[in-house]
Length: 126
Image 1 (cartoon, rainbow, N blue to C red):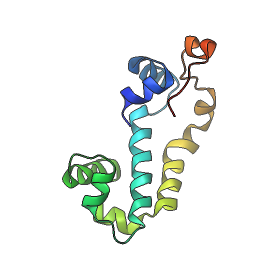
Image 2 (cartoon, one colour):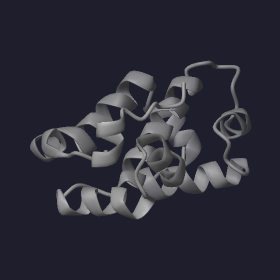
Image 3 (cartoon, rainbow, N blue to C red):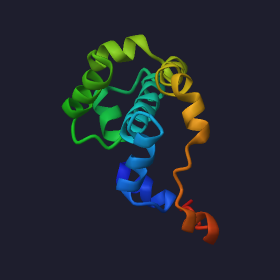
Image 4 (cartoon, rainbow, N blue to C red):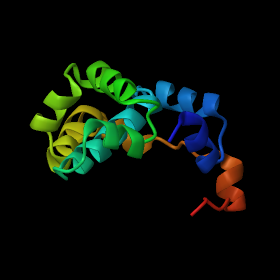
């Protein structure tokens, strides 16, 4: 999921979503989406039959190299090191320790939805 798609889902402009995270003192929403994507990748890697190329394709990366660059940028390791170090549960724990627990109070106060969406009860896509 992209920030654009996520903001459409929440019925806010992407710039509004980014601004609300910034004002709350939170990491950018893009960091949360990137980490969530890696949680999914780690879970998929639990299947020994899945290769890096399979994971990259399944998660809509443009190529296995693109997936590898993403892992290196976010975690500072290769995709194969990532596979060896994290399973789905361990990556979820890492996500929690890096992006949830340090920001728990700010996340509780965050109100990313627009007032119009709350009043109208905007439906979210299934």
